[in-house]
Image 1: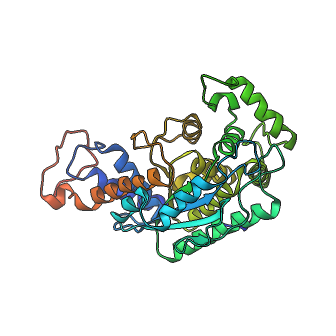
Image 2: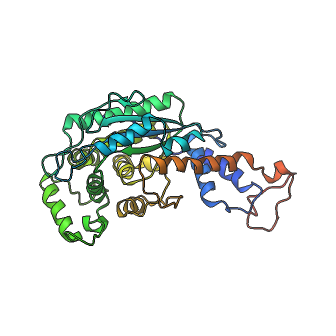
Length: 367
């Protein structure tokens, strides 16, 4: 994996931004999440009053477990999904257009051939990840190629002038790889994030079944904080090779690369969340550049957010991937920029702030 440097947020810009927010013509702290988002963007961009952010969307396509017993579709469903992107008729593209956000779709590992889709970036590393019951999901070389491609996309979108990127995925059977990646990093039990079903094996039986596949690869980690930086990186990369898959590895590289360019990343579901966990474990400063969007009623996603200590903003009960939740999250960031720049301060509006109110000492009147 290539070397990179991620800088802390720029504290002076955040302090100056917070002072402006506190002096906007509203009750102090009343816009909660919007205020925190604006303040964080000041630190990300080292700009006390960021405005007119440039947004983009990145969707990575890859199937999982192609040689596993559950592969009955053989990529037909994900092919239809990516075909809709090629034809420009997805909800994600509709939402992105409202923010003038270009949507980039890259196929790195769908099972079916997509070379006939002219608007999809064809970067196929292999046609789907293995089932870890057979062998590691990808080889060491494929892992390195996926990571490097993610970094390369971060370089590309940064060169295009983007400052915020919503990430998403297309692909079949990503659930199991996301589950193992998440549980290994957060330390929870497989049974804690498996969904109960009315028929078939119990949660405990399914958890034991997964352990029978992955334990032989020695991916378990007892104490992440006790490890050195290089040990953490190597353990995460080993995990991604054994049970992560092409898309999670690609997005891990992209997130690290984006943060090194001071670009923010918005994520949504269990797949994108698994990549966030991997990137933040390799380099904890990544968390300063990450924003959650939609809340999913799904245990893996909930565990990811719990571990990261973040709360999604949008509660729409979404049941779709394809970066729709992440793209809708861009609208929250855009709203925070409007708050910061379109609202006036008490001085600008020539409105008198209460001298004994909650903002005493922070809110200023015109002299």
